[in-house]
Amino acid sequence: MDTDVIVIGGGVSGLAAGYFLKKKNRSVLLLEKATRIGGSIHTERSNDFLLEYGPNSTTLSNPAIKELIGELSIDKNVLFPGANGKKRFILKNSKLAALPMSPGDFLFGNFFSVMTKLRIADEPLLPRGKKDDESVAAFFTRRFGKVITDTVVRPFVSGIYAGDADQLSARSTFPSLFETEREYGSIIGGQLKKMLFKKKTKSSSGSGFGKLFSFDQGMQALTNTLAASMGEIVHLGAETLAITKNAEGWKVQLQQNGMVNHATCRAVVLATPAYASAELIKPLSPELADKLNSVQYAPIGVVHTAYKRTIVSHPLDGFGFLVPPKENRNILGCIFSSSLFPNRAPQDSALLTTFVGGTTQKEILSGAQEEILRSTNSELQSILGISGDPVFSRLTTITRAIPQYNLGHYRIMEAVDSFEKDHPNLFFCNNFRGGVSIANCVQSARNLAETF
Image (tube, rainbow, N blue to C red; front, side):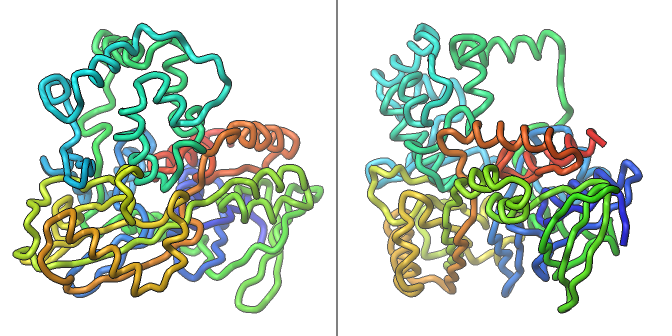
């Protein structure tokens, strides 16, 4: 069982890495410990409802994701949200308020006070930051003020990353904004200059670039199609036990169907979470293993609730809403799933996907399932004006969902870079490195394949 590259991990990172390596005519073997492909991407259709247990969507934010879905011929199955997808709500004083999404809305709307608008306008006049790293909360408070941080930034990072703005690293979580301030001295000024440069050079990545999307059968269509495109090289229920160096390259010990076997290869790609990667490389570098084990993962409860549409008074005319911590609610945010993309629910029903827990409210997930469902339903009834009980509600708890790019994360990544230099042809490719979104993972996978 000899091959050019063994990819360990069958989530989107591993599958994309295997795909791009195979495209470069490399022989590939992909090993996945679970009996299901896709990792955190998991879609299920139940009683005419389409449920996403992991990512609900991603963006056409880089060339790799556009290239991939085109080559897999699933671009015809892509769904973009309508006008609803552009509208985002924030819970503000116990009521939903639409977040300004254009300069006109910002200038003439009443979401922000005049004083807050003036504080934002001061941003280009402020000095550069001097720290190598600072928390997301400190970074945005320094640039835009406390109101923006508490009202917008904190709910954003708790709703998207399930993280704590006081612990997440601005340098690692928002690298583009961090570098913009370093280069231009201002986020607003730097972004404007970048926009002008793009217009001047007429640089464009094509129609739809940057847009949010999913697939008609949900996000698992991507990982299913990737796996199908690679055929027999994907092995499920194959647990990697050890990785050792040998004269030819690398030797991988694995267990499948109760049998212990081994495979040799020129290169290994670890497309596993930080904690799983730590166990595999510990014999090679206990120091890096310790650093990888320090990467925290946020626990998340995903609650799917469906209601008869007639009992929901809110028009659900948006992507969903986020909840600032200062509102003291028991949920992080909610996606209006049946409004965002078509065929997610019967026409007479509303499907909502609500997130609870995260790093800031992890204690909620220690409660009984019935209590979490009851609490979530109560919050949705209060916020959305729902006058009855759900048709069904379902809780799925993911104990280690999203890696947290906390303060000092860049130093862990520097250690990973150093390890790769010292151990040629052993690579890391997962969402604890290079961004947590699906699009980020696909781009990282293509970048890796280009090094072969």
